[in-house]
Image (cartoon, rainbow, N blue to C red):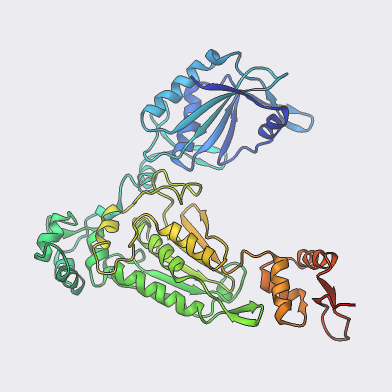
Length: 460
């Protein structure tokens, strides 16, 4: 039985003001349980979400208005609770709670739906996904795509139309076998690992042990590096040169990509307290996030991992949505390997890129924090996951301005925006005004032909 909780009228107002969309939906208490199950299926199969059942939308003078018209009592919602219970039995993760407000009619059922590891079907047997405020049925290729997204099916097990010699007689596998325990013949070992089946290599075998996996898996097994000389969006006009493509087996691909990205970044300069300084990112963060992008990507999608290097940030885009039950909210606290064989076997290489399996993202967070840089930011798109590393200090804008003026005689608005990452000229002015009002800085006397600037407050 779901518990009942009394909330305040201010909490009620916040709930009623929620916007229906990708993560939230309102339903009237008269909704058929089978229809409600479509929304639950859609939330569970996408990114999770919340439902408030017992709130009616009524057309009013100011447009659509929401009215609290809940269930008479808990038993009045039994049919809906039964459907939720049935879905939960097949792998759903849900929590239910009745909400009541003094002076409002009835109980509203608040349902929190977690993103599930498996595929959740509605009462009609169909599978739905959430797109904006819509519940869309998926079948055929779209359902297969969902299973890849969820990690139920892994493209790493697909067999390629080539002979085993591509992986059993490569320089990569021979070098690997020299350090394998117990030692053995490559073909025998690869077969025991179930990555060579019926004399044909799987995608996992090809990515790990072929000397040139990109020849067999084009457009889905390399890393593309693009350098944009801008702080704005990625546009072709800002590309400093043609995109670079790093190729090779996964082990060398990861290390070579990290080395090249670091080399490009070291050529970027930014305004610092002592003038122009080289941009510095912790190599651990770059390594761990790029390793994750390569190892946990969806190889069924014909697209390479992309690393986009801007003047103020690095973006790493990995094809494929977050697998299983992983969400942006729990990505640092949970684990799910979309490609478990790749993750396990690459860890057997000398100097494996995933030394601390399952700890990569947390290591990246810690590395950024040591340099007092902002934490990595994760955004899930329709086609993949983008993680952004910004070379922006955790220090406040006021502190950065003071540190700069401790080394320099004056600072302009443009210099300060470059230093702090603030885009708006007016927002930067407000930082100066706060420092002025606190008695820390003063405006430099205006000199004809020079831009306005600020300096530390001089005694007297």
